[in-house]
Amino acid sequence: MKLYRKILALGLTAAMLGLTACGSSSADATSAAESESDTEAAEETSEEAADGQTYNIGICQLIQHPALDQATQGFKDAVTEGLGEENVNFDEQNANGDAATATTICTNFAAEDVDLILANATASIQAAAAATGDIPILGTSITDYGVALDIADFGGTVGGNISGTSDCAPLEEQASMMEDIFPDAQTIGILYCSAEPNSKFQADTVQAKLEADGKTVKIYTFSDSNDLASVTSEACDNVDALYIPTDNTAASYTETINNIALPAKTPIFAGEEGIMAGCGVATLSISYYNIGYVTGQMAVEILKDGADISTMPIRYDDAPVKKYNPTICEELGLTMPEDYEAYEAE
Image 1 (tube, rainbow, N blue to C red):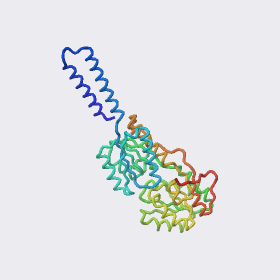
Image 2 (tube, helix red, strand yellow):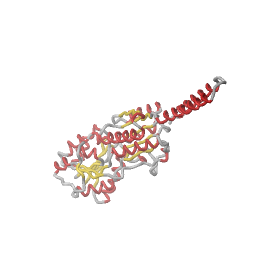
Image 3 (tube, one colour):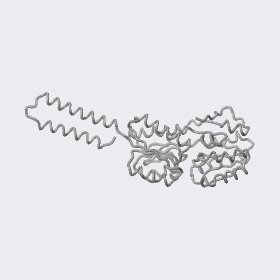
Image 4 (cartoon, one colour):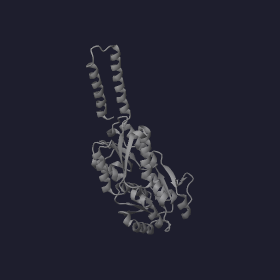
C-alpha cells in the first residue's frame, strides 16, 4: 500500500471537516449529520484506493526458451490471481542471453522504482542484485542461490531483499537414473556452458556420484553457441552417453545438439524437460510452470500481505517427474521403464 495515497485521502477529509466548521452558525443537526456522512465517504474512498493499488512489476528473463517461458507464465498467473489482473502492470523484458543486457534492464527497473523484480535465471538475479538493495527481488529458474550470488555456506535463505525458487532437481537421483537407463555405458560425458556457474555446480555433483559408482566421466564445456557444435561432436566421438544439466545456453540450442548426437547414436540424459524435448532421451525434471507459480505466490505475500522477504527461504518443486522422449527413444531403439511418463509436446 502506498503511504502517500492514504495521507492524501486523510488530507481531503480534514479539509472537508474544516469547511464545515467555517459554515454558518445556524448549522443544525442535519448539517452535522451530513458532515459525518462526508467523513465516512472520504474514509471509504481511501479504503477503495488502497484496495485498488496498482503494482508495477519488472520481469527480466535471461533468454527465451520453453522452460523459462513457463516459469514466467506461472509467475504472472499467480500474481494476477492474487492481486487482480487490473491491479498489476508487468514490464516483461528479455535479455536475449546477454548478461550486459540483463544489467541494463534491471538498472532501469531500479531507476523506475518498480514494486518488485522477477529475475528469471542466474544472470538475471545477479544483475538485479547489483542494481538494487531495496526493491524486493524474487528469482526463479536458479539452481543454487549460494553459487549464483557467491554466498559462502548458503543455508537456504538469502536475506536482504532477495528470495525466490530453485529449479534444482535431485542431482544424485539423476545420476542413478542414467545408470539404470544406460547400464552398459562405462564412459559418460557431461556437456555444459562454462559461462553458467549453476551448470558447473550440477556437473560437479553428478560427476562425483557417477565416479563413486565406478563410471569414467569426461567433462566437455563450450563457451557459447559458436563452439557448441564442435564440442558436442568431440563428446559424441568419445563417450557412451551424455548428461546435460539444466543449462540456459544448451536449452536454446537443442536442435544443434540433436543434429549431432542422434546420428552418432549418443543418448542424452537431460537435467530438465525442455532440453529432453529437444535432444534428450529422458529426464527427472521439475515443473518450471510450478516454480514460477510458487514465485508468484511469494510476490503476493510480499506486496499484499506484507511478508518480510529477508526471512523467506528459497522454495522448491518437491515432486519431480520421470519423463522420456518417445521420438528419440524410438530412433535409438530404447525401451524405457514403465514408471517413466511419455513427453507430449504442447
